[in-house]
Length: 136
Image 1 (cartoon, rainbow, N blue to C red):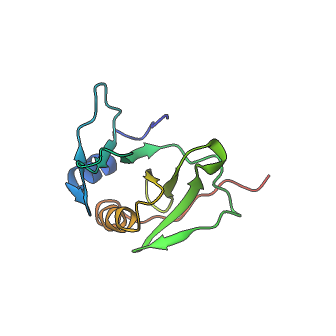
Image 2 (cartoon, helix red, strand yellow; image 1 turned 135 degrees about the vertical axis):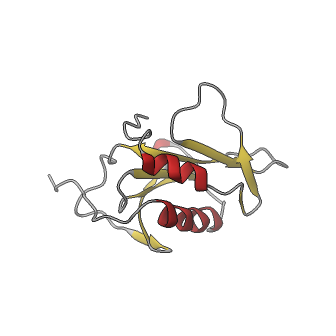
């Protein structure tokens, strides 16, 4: 997934501020070559699917003026379900910051990952007006 804005200060600050734990999930080491602006957390006991964060992504193609948003701890998130692609996860995009941040969360993970990461995104990256695509 292209992340053209993964190098700017916003992403570096976010990566430095990320917690070591998201509830029961612990920060996982990324395999080389790790993409810029990426982090992951996984349950060390089960080694199930990880929660993956990417910073600096392009605006998601599906995000337009008709998109529903969910506000979690002051961050506007746009959700893309993986169900239509046969995935048992959803990817949430923070769309109200200077860079797009995506968090892919496996189904059944509960609310903790998005809540904790919302707090971190809110603290690390200044809020900006959303910029959805026009409706075609």
